[in-house]
Length: 233
Ligand SMILES: *[C@@H]1O[C@H](CO)[C@@H](O)[C@H](O)[C@H]1NC(C)=O
Ligand SMILES: *[C@@H]1O[C@H](CO)[C@@H](O)[C@H](O)[C@H]1NC(C)=O
Ligand SMILES: *[C@@H]1O[C@H](CO)[C@@H](O)[C@H](O)[C@H]1NC(C)=O
Image 1 (tube, rainbow, N blue to C red):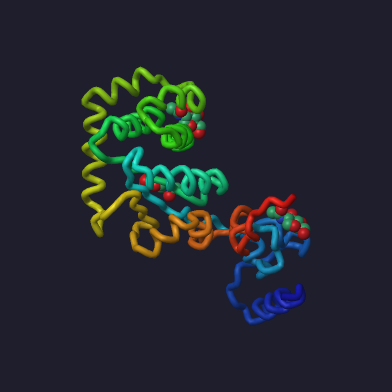
Image 2: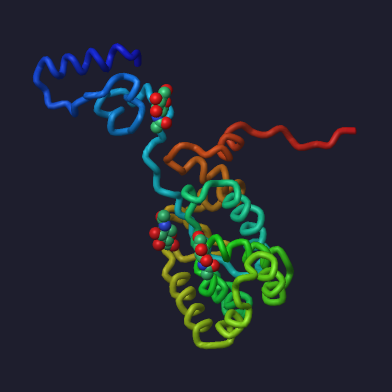
């Protein structure tokens, strides 16, 4: 839109006595805030005003610790997507469940760490190895040395661990449709075969497609198919 148009519209509006939000600002201030841009009908001219923030894409992962397909998804898709995207684009909920010690370790770690940002790298590390239980100590040392490994072990062996597992069992059993396999991905409250397939093929691309806000930089790379990676002599 040319700058003259909003001015003309405004003059018309004033002339007709319409109750437009008033634009008592000189043109050089039109882009200084979203409210002023709206009042002056100059939004399309103000490319530097960011759009109102969109809701994050909600992803819940129901999985079993150390099931190879779950490890693959968590390590190769979920973690990398999380690292690449700004924090307000993707909101991840992990629901580890199966009656084994390794799942209790994950649930207790999540409980102790509280923050996703604190526990997710530790879980990534645990799931990158072959024994989540054995890995816990080493992974904590590297990724969250501030956490107390003793408290997590006590949780696993005590009532708290059992209660956390019980809650995750309930969450898993309440899934609609019921889960048929793991990893089971729920996106924005929905599970379909198509969403699951897209998530497992390229979670980054799927989240970029679903996110309604300004596309973050990492999304630009997913838009055009990449040339095959090769090494030449
Ligand atoms: C946007 O850019 C204009 C100049 O083009 C500037 O006057 C204005 O202050 C900027 N707004 C913000 C919010 O940075
Ligand atoms: C992220 O998901 C949790 C549920 O797992 C929810 O309580 C929280 O409000 C969500 N946060 C945002 C910013 O959407
Ligand atoms: C949770 O994250 C905040 C910063 O986002 C940090 O200050 C706090 O220590 C973290 N809590 C734990 C238990 O790590």
